[in-house]
Length: 357
Image (tube, rainbow, N blue to C red; front, side, top):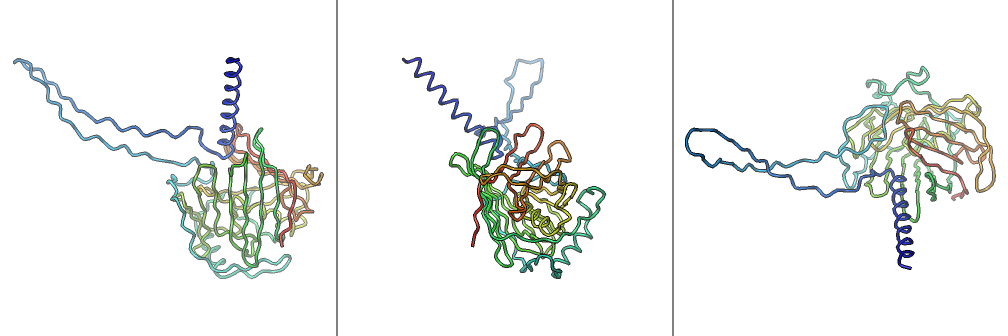
């Protein structure tokens, strides 16, 4: 009987350890547990001399111990553009400076670029190039956009054998918007990303992007449109604000808005290129290629979706696959993302759509 109880106790402990390990992997945490800092040992200098007289006790002067400073470098998301070493983020990242109102885009209509946006674009053009050429492009293309209405998309969120739920909430309100992705596993919030801003001639125009993971502080990217630059709460990196720049969440709406407004991009062989910025001080060009029209199983049944793929450009770069549904305003019905050959990655698969007033 005691042997049976011990065996069941061991199985329960192993199951709990496996669940914790998966949650840590899901939220992108470091595997090492926090360690208690050890006090540095005092530095001792010893001097010895040999003389002909009787031995003398050596004098050992006690030197003050040195303080060992710990340098914390947050794990980067392997940016294609090299940046300065990141510093630890502040507990509460300050909001970005107030930006001027941003003119909303009207689908299929000509839009006048605000002077502030034009000035920012001019400053970016004058700055040293930091974006790699994609398919021979030295500058990013300009697209028309058609924004979707307010919606909430409910997904199954999966990483390996671990499953949870994810809600993508899109809230446009006149000249402003908020886009929020919430991921939960086993009742725990493992991911919260929020993109907020407005609209301009290039489509979605983020002002601030925040990214929070399980047991980690919030990091932010600030799109300072008046100053024409992008800054970060947890990094000293700084980039020129390029026309059409998106964050690691807003691209999901921007891609659909571009394809909705550009019929020529709705077939195999189409390409959409944009500049994408993360919250860790990284920025790079993402080129999405339409590779197929595939049937995707959803909670409401199979749908025919356009599959776009962003291939990695170096060993630990981000690979993205996204299937967008023309019947759902070209928003994602499925998406996968992984970084590196050994990364399980994660997947979103649509279960239902909620129309918001």
